[in-house]
Length: 110
Image 1: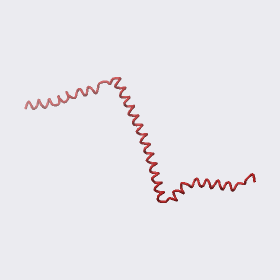
Image 2: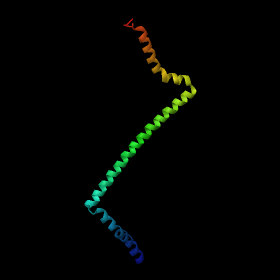
Image 3: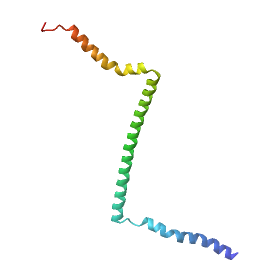
Image 4: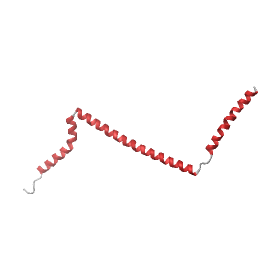
């Protein structure tokens, strides 16, 4: 019974004796070089994160443009004249207005 009790008490003592160097190592003050290295690492990580956000934004914009092209092509395939007319209505109306304006204004030389 006594060997069992001694073995039971020694178990926690061994555990803490093995873990004590880890605790001491984590509580030691950080040197200046290590601080500088950690700051450089943090700055590099922030740079990578900002670059990743920019790339993600570019891909989001590209995917939106591809979706609009896809819907435009699908509409053109279903209704080709409607799609062509909707794309040409502004230039045609500008030409029509210029033509009407020329006909309605009197020619000063005549």
